[in-house]
Image (cartoon, rainbow over all chains, first blue to last red):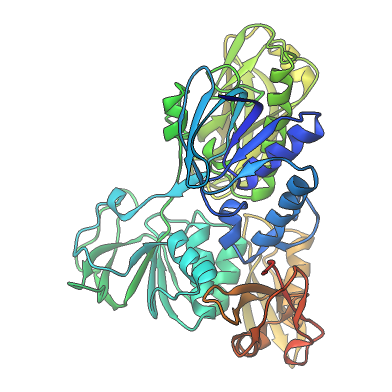
Amino acid sequence: MRTVDILIVGGGPAGLAAAVSAYESGCRSILILEREEALGGILKQCIHNGFGLHTFHEELTGPEYAQKYIDKVVEYQIPYQCCTMVLDITEERVVTAVSNVNGLQQFQAKSVILAMGCRERPRGALAIPGWRCSGIYTAGTAQKFVNLEGIMPGKKVMILGSGDIGLIMARRMTFMGAKVLACVELLPYSSGLKRNIVQCLDDYGIPLLLNHTVVDISGRERLEGVTVAEVDPETKQPIPGTETYYECDTLLLSVGLIPENELSKLAGVKISSATGGAEVDENLETSVPGIFSCGNVLHVHDLVDFVSQEAEKAGKKAFQFVQGQLAENGARIPVTGGFGVAGAVPQVLHAGSGGSPVTLMFRPKGVYRNAKISVSAEGTELYSRKYRILTPGEMVSLELGPDLLSRAAGAKELTVKVEA
Amino acid sequence: MRKEITCIGCPMGCRMTAEVEDGKILSVEGYSCNVGKKYAQEELTVPKRMVTSLVHVRGSSRPLPVRTSAPIEKSKIFDCLREIRACEITPPVKIGDVIISRVCGTQADIVATREVF
């Protein structure tokens, strides 16, 4: 069995940034395992621009953003294996992987960084009635077909769900000569970025039907059309008599992302029901010592820039763990989400974590105008900030400084909540 | 003429209404900060967009992703896409290589965003 200081599962934006940062912290024994044939993860197929504004202060496309990190990995000669599927991770950090070239391999890692990303919610998770015909894809699958394989999935397209990938695909399909009829959203607001709604739908006259959903799918072999109905905003039930039939050959689903944590569970990592990702402390360390988690496998981010930042921290902290310098001082203080807060990360802070600030991230549960976000310990407010608007489409990120953390030292619990 | 614009500056997404006569902006209402005001003025004079698309690669079914080197006028997007679609490249290509120079008579080039060997 080979030994390695830091083993990184996944060679997407999180895995790459973690590897680069671990190397720059001084680690010289790193291995990235990637199941696809090339590094870069989902960025390979995200050929649109808008990446890297925070990190590089320029607007890059996905492949360009990924290449900046891949170039570093190559420059630092950080070892990586593509076409390699990790099958198992144990609590003792023994990692089993398989590939055509190397067969079955086992590694004893001093530290493991989970960077597997997320996958899309499929049709099966939605329970839409109707025929099980071809022509129904998740937006990301269609994106892979078009942008990587050069194959168009169809000509007349409906989109269910208004997540960012769905919006981006509305524009891509339009650019490639298809007709996009409408984007249908169950909720009274889109979970996508405002910029994408304007530049992917409004620019091309594609209607966004809020409070609507697909209630029937027609077509025996190939999709022939979908029936869309308005829903009651309170009950989310379709309103009889509002049905409209749209003739189309393609239905794209953009209805949410799920962190891909099967391996984490094998390692005994505790998973948060709120995020679908691992429960971590301020060092991004999971419930299993030496196993860290970052990027979309930890919680689904809006921007890759934030994934990179988080992964850089994971890389640094994993190397501190390897060197035995990751002190977890003091009592564990759980962080709980109060009103309006979904899936706060990290879930736990250590009272004596000392000098460095902690980034606390979460997603607002609804749209709140002129709202305040507060962090309090047993009723005493330690931090507050006002926002003109909070929406589920934009993750909130709070920087909690060392002085706040020291004031929280004796607390049994920290609560973050929205006051609207 | 009245024009409706949704600001993309932040999640507020302010809906702005502008009065435009013969290409002159008479008034803009509905913005809550200067970002919105500036965005409305840009959108009402010459709206511009970055364009990203795909180019055929000779001898391969897998396309090459490309983008404009700078935003181009919104009105030229589909002409630009037509020019990109008519194009075919022969590898190797490096990131940043110019695939079409001065696309559709604009100042922008079409450049490669991925390496192809």
